[in-house]
Image (cartoon, rainbow, N blue to C red; front, top):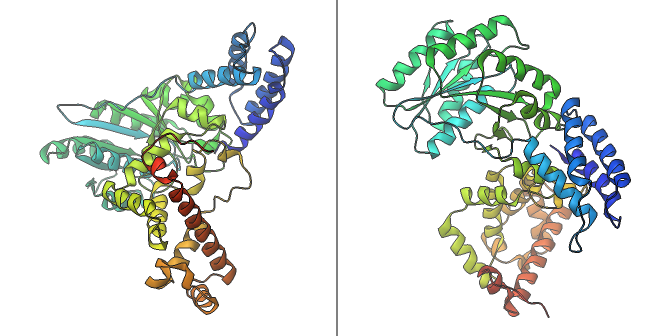
Length: 442
């Protein structure tokens, strides 16, 4: 998501970077182009208009000091306005410290409510909470079975009843949680293909019955302005606390994410980047604004790495790097960690500059191919690629379902990486890198 928007904004800002100073003319020309880009991305018309007006007011009359360029200044102003547009600061979910916390999950059918409910339950486990998932979607076929399956995967109990009365299920789940020492109830409610009075009445009644600390509206970010309209309808009826953007890893223009907070007036609290049950993150406006402007999101990338890296294994890897003994087994281990962190495209989007490179291969199948090749090697071959002669490579290609060219390419890249590490070790740079010291190149 946002790749197309980022590229277009980057192109528009290039036009002003070569200017010696900011003038009313070059500001107007640049912002006219940016306004068109925002509208093409399906940003709400009023939101786009107000955004451009705010940027214009701040840009006009600004003095460009010698240390920055006009392009840098206008980019900074746009970044600041994007952060404000997206909410200013992140909002944590409200938890009841002493009693049962109730979270009501609402939204249209197909928005990803059920999957998000399981993701949220998994996240609560990391907070040392004791969650309970509640199957209150009694209309969608297999919705209850889906939630039970997801509950098994995240190791969280699921409450359901043999009744079509969602109100009774929701109310009974609170008593069940209290009786069983569970302190966080997540109620997955029913959705419809469109907003209707029956849906709204049911959600409103459940709200009155369970008195939730949090009501989260889950929205499919790929539905554009329709998502904003449904958010307004739900907010008018149940006055939800926060928004959850799902399917941010899909082919979306970004208009929903940029419009919904400004139109509805409620903060975005979580974003979901994929189907895996660990792919949900607290929403940070400044981080998303940075990604939209092609500056990446290194903080989130580091946080994801910290979640999946084992400190003992990291120390072992560091020692191998120092001694230049990094082999294919170590390489395979790192690939498995990367796959746990999310899709390649989502990780690349966090690296400054890479999300705007069209020739970056972000196909997750590529990692699977590399894994297959390494798994087809013997222990000796993994330790020392020097033994990989023609017949061995042919056997590996056949065993991994790849081509000899694929095997040759991987071995060549790995050998080059080892050679580079050897040079860094010889010059003492590797110790400097691992010790986080300043490096001076001659």
